[in-house]
Image 1 (tube, one colour):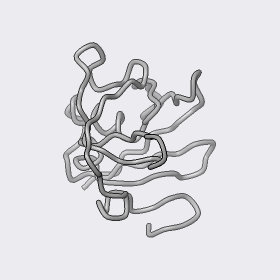
Image 2 (cartoon, one colour):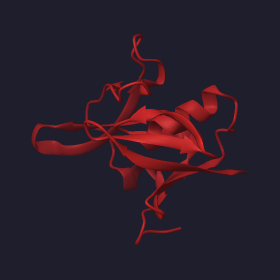
Image 3 (cartoon, rainbow, N blue to C red):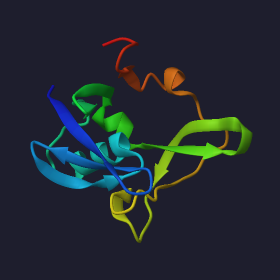
Length: 126
């Protein structure tokens, strides 16, 4: 199992520019999910690999590439931020170009229920 570290830098409209080993791989409002999809699409990761983010030298989210590639986040009305199954947009493959990622859901499980994230900077399990 390999660990892929994605470096995030701020981009316009609440998005993040994603780099891997100094190479720009895209911009997204949901970088860990978009980067996981990109890694799989490029054949650079196995679904069992781990992916993590770093912003300004500080570790961020960490999770399983295969699991995160299948997910997206959405914020709806009073229910707050939710993780939902990813649904690709025909106009934006993988949702990398501008962060527009479509998703569908009824009542999705929380991150903890999905067991998706194994660590958050400054807390959680590592």
